[in-house]
Amino acid sequence: MASTADGDSPLLVERSDDRVVATLNRPDKRNAIDQATIDALHELCAELEAEPRTLILTGAAGVFAAGADIAELRERRAADALRGINAYAFIRVAELPMPVIAAIDGYALGGGAELAYAADIRIGTPSLAIGNPETGLGILAAAGASWRLTEIVGDARATELLLTGRTVTAEEALRIGLVSSLHDSSDLLTAAHAIADRIARNDRAATVATKRVFRAPRDRHPSVDLEAQAELFESPEKFRRMTDFLERRRRTHEGERV
Image (cartoon, rainbow, N blue to C red; front, side):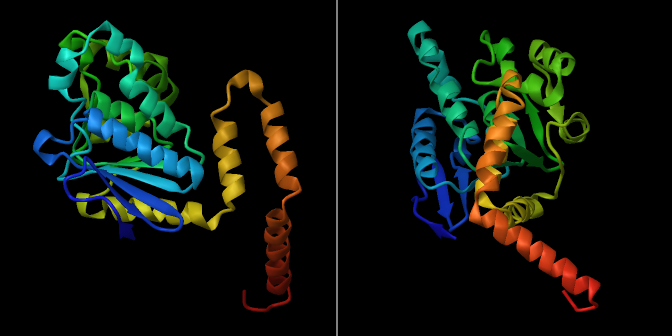
């Protein structure tokens, strides 16, 4: 993979033909998400909207992101809250055409957790600690937790987690579905790439359609599914892939090696 960001950037970006790895890179601040990080996320989203690829989000130095930058947050006022600085950036991440994979090591707290919630797939390590302690700081989790967390773990658990502000450790995160798998820290990115490899073997148009349909509001179904399927049914790639499948099955039935 090719890297084009310098080591001082708050977001290190490595690019290849079918995926991008973006590493939150403020290790001295435990990768706290500041305005520069948000600006870099917007820049990356613009790139991935124009040229869709799978995105792997991770953090440097054994931490995903220990929260938003508290020094910046302390100085923000009502007008800043209404701008939705983090919220709109994370919405943009969530709405990228191709899947987003969050590879979470160590802390993912506050804004770091909310960035992770914006991903389509989350995997972690045994040192994972994720949660939203915002109420202890006199604010609320307004960058996605209040609506995404319930979609991930259900109303009862989401309410309890947001109101108590407690941190969820790795095993509980796996049990309640906050992450789909756990891996040793040394294997975390390998596991994320394995997921990206599996996605890359599928048809890109079908993957984009599946993500779009999955995220559509309930009242849009089944029309949104059927409209997307109608488009895919006319795709040359659908005919090629189905023909290849039938040919492989025919050869298998005839005793040939597939």
